[in-house]
Image (cartoon, rainbow, N blue to C red; front, side):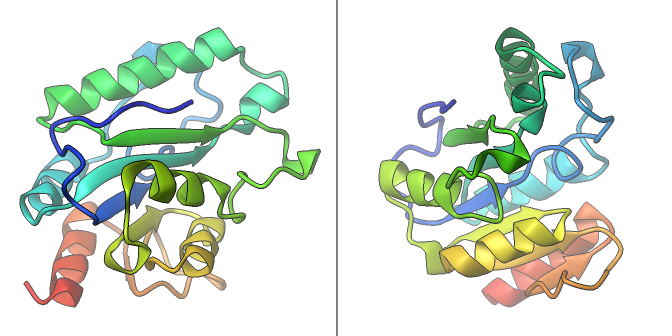
Length: 184
């Protein structure tokens, strides 16, 4: 699934590539009900600050619940629409959104840590990976960013395999680290 550019437009070449569950919204397992969508504390303010620095926002998320048969494509689409609404209500619009719906054993090129989602976003949105950040809450997110040539930010308690450019357990702290790395 992909969504077109929002208020960011196509003039920027830098973006924050965001994992969804556990990074932007609370991870409650395979979300089937749009009413379960909740932004993480501090996420909205941090993303608004990054947008003010000229970054576009792009979702890049594994959604294996579809491939596992745990949720339908219609349920996934309803949850995605709610994510867009919640972000919009927080003053944020996405430049794009890309999901891998495949089972982990499918061998696709889009399931993180493969770079297919980032590669597609780069092509379609005209991104410059070295000017982008991939932000996630799993080591596979960090690995994806490294493979795709972006900078990486890890949200959560540091663990083996999460050697990101910036790591923090909260969005406000992650923002501080990312802005510091940007020189701002």
